[in-house]
Length: 352
Image 1 (cartoon, rainbow, N blue to C red):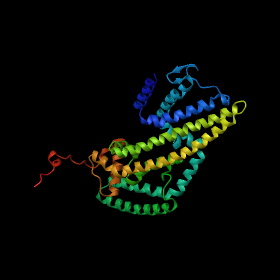
Image 2: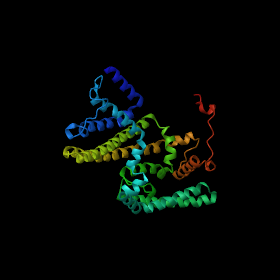
Image 3: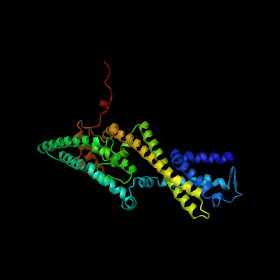
Image 4: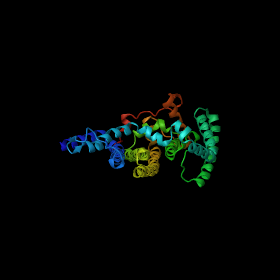
């Protein structure tokens, strides 16, 4: 029976995958165990959390410790199902967060962004406006637009030099509409802003296509960082819930359970520290993601049958056109596709 249960659990975890076990099940086990042996403990005025009755036995498991094995499975599935919502919650991406609970932080970050990046935003908006005109103009107008583009580049470079003296590593996006109330949210916004800022690439439209072309080693680096981030955010979520639960339950019981209240306060402190660790992991993941755009964006162009322009301005203009095509089907602005190589061209020339 013991081997049968162990084999069944092992098969289940193999089917659900490493992500489920590490990022979902382990935090859930810890959460359920803390509830089992603190909140529901008779030592702190609670009642034991028992499945199927205290006399139930299944192999090495009793009704008492079976809860510590079975309940985390369901909790982990919920964490996996709501993963996107959990990440967005800690980004501060929901409007109700920005308008109510995190409003002071949102206002402070927006004011800081306007003060620090206002001029840069204006210059870059004009820069991309001129780039768009370059793509759709005739030869004479193109020359004038290119002159304006070069002048704007010099102004942008001077502004960036000034900003680097203030903050060598940016901690928030320069576009006001991308600003978030949390450090985690601003790092994700920076991740999306980087490819557009450097190459004119719409990260939301291009990333799924780029990711499918990345080497396995690069995919593994990004996946490992995302797995670690999910693990930490799930721990933060459950530690926060346990912290509130411990404080409330400890205060309402008679007599007041000071140890349980202390455990709740400690859990909230741990949740904050884990959140800061998650911010660091997000920064590292951002380096992997932005590097993928630097090194492998040409693979997307190749798959689309397009050549990578030698000049940065021309490449930025091309990616803007590609985004218009992918989002709205505006293919009339795209340059001609490269002709497919014939079998004769693919064969290497015979050696002399």
